[in-house]
Length: 187
Image 1 (spheres, rainbow, N blue to C red):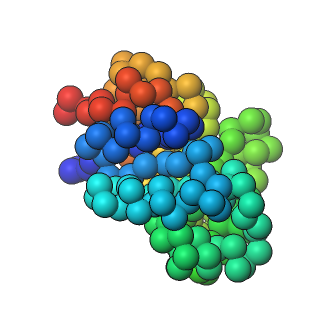
Image 2: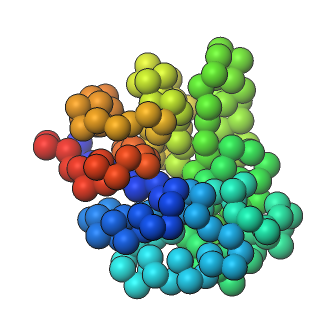
């Protein structure tokens, strides 16, 4: 099976955006650096560098969660993908024509059960499982019910751990650890 393992830089401090832009990754998560005043500029900067922009709509200062907010993300701010933990908001983002990544927190057996029930309704393009140490154990179960890309995130700060996640079958990881942004799987 030929697949590409992706390390998506999660930029939490605007001062580190340049470093993320220098990575060879095709996507950047503007984690906590954007608000409605700078989002268009940041998106343009990423697009000029050939990278798609992922935003967590829940963390964009000044942005609501109604249908208009997702239309604005698509049309006014030119965002490529929305990531979030609210299944209803992910569905709204999809309706606005945005790609979506649904964040699934693996807290306990109830959260796991609710995630499996919600996948069909949410219909995300990709799923982010967190924290990665738990995601590692449950990837197989998610593959049984979801055919899209599955990422791990949360506490991924060593190349050895990223390699284990790659070997396990994840499509990639999202990490704010800058030393990981240029990491490529050796396979």
